[in-house]
View 1 (cartoon, one colour):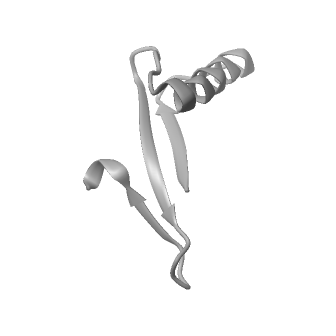
View 2 (cartoon, helix red, strand yellow):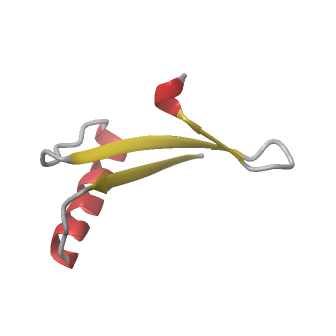
View 3 (cartoon, one colour):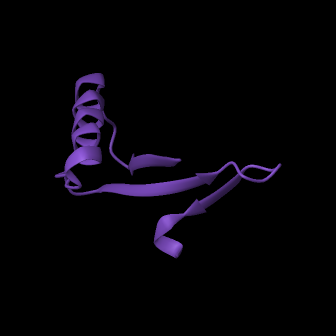
Length: 61
């Protein structure tokens, strides 16, 4: 399973947070996201095949 994590140092209001969520939802199907500068996006690969939960950043592969 993949988890998308978006972070920013900016303070965001609820409307802007929802806009980012919608953009990322669309990116899951299109593969393209257009986000403002200062926004970092990471995709985590959560592997549930072992007894312990493993979380690996895809960009490290």
